[in-house]
Image (cartoon, rainbow, N blue to C red; front, top):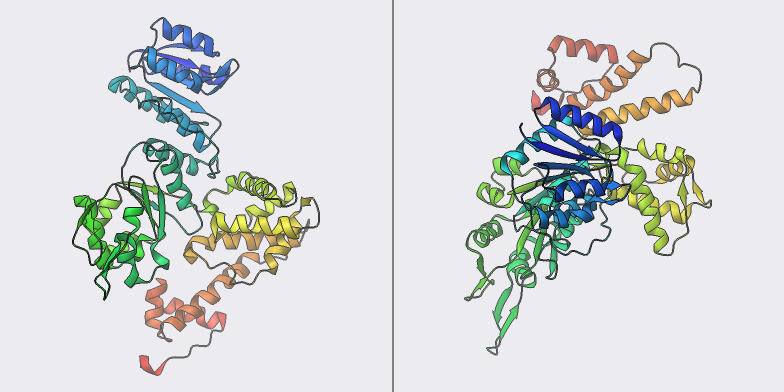
Length: 479
């Protein structure tokens, strides 16, 4: 790299680390801990790129970015922040930042970004007025930071977005945020859940309906595409869309026009399409249940939402948010003890963020104390029927977590004393017994097929059956 980089951060350690790394990379560096000095150097024409923190002792760097863009529109500005929220990413993008990176940052990624910025010398997006208010997207985890960065880049585009993730991860929240903070925000946001509409009604629901009554009167029912004109149409559970409707949707995306069901008049489509699914669309394509050409039209920019079990560090912020939300709705003021937070971290969260929100609401109403304890949480979870939350993930995805929880409770039960010897073999047996028994049942007792299914030698399987005293019932159909 060649050029001068201005580093603005009130943390002396960060200034030193960045100065050393950039110098080794071949750059000249000027470092400061104040907004005022940063602005003076920019006015004087110094620097080929800027790296700046957001919150500084003498102000907010994001408030200064529009002035920098006006003064030196070709100067790339890389914003870093420990305030790792979606609003920080949005504000940075709208203020004209070249890139937004959350703290703690990856030094290699930062250096690569600086190099690209100085080589391309791109101008950033124009500053647009936006009502910057809190969004119901909570999380400071690295997984959520990546979601925020993608969202910030998409706010002022009309690119098709496919949001994937398990049920309860907040797909509609992301879709609505893309609309509410984009240039279509003054137009309608229409959400349609394909999965809950009878298949025979999906076509007319989306594209509208024209019918002639026996009296010769034309009856027109506008569809969701017309209702969303100029705005955003969010199609949830797109994987459940029938093949005939997939073909019509593809035509809309290709031609930008459609006709109502039973109609003859061609209507223009002016909507941004955002879709979502918890299903594996590539697998559906292989099965012939989803069109590959439609998938590529919808999947221009993919956003994958992490499951709650993959961002456990976000649970405290999410739980406190739901407590505040409940209080704002008139429910009692409650807080969570540290032990309660840890108890929340131990749960499998098959229902993801939605399950956590529902649990917090029940605790606010049912817990008699002002402070919700770990015991309150454990009792409430234990009181629910096992079928209260339908698992939305594959068993293999939660097996290790279930075993970890089981072992943690096992050790907690013995307090300061260790459990009896032989724990390793006992745990292996607890896993092997149901695994082999269920596999045998699935193959109707065929040991050769069971061995192939498990990926073990047939003699090994026979030995395990004998050791575990598993009764094998061979179906007559298999003989």
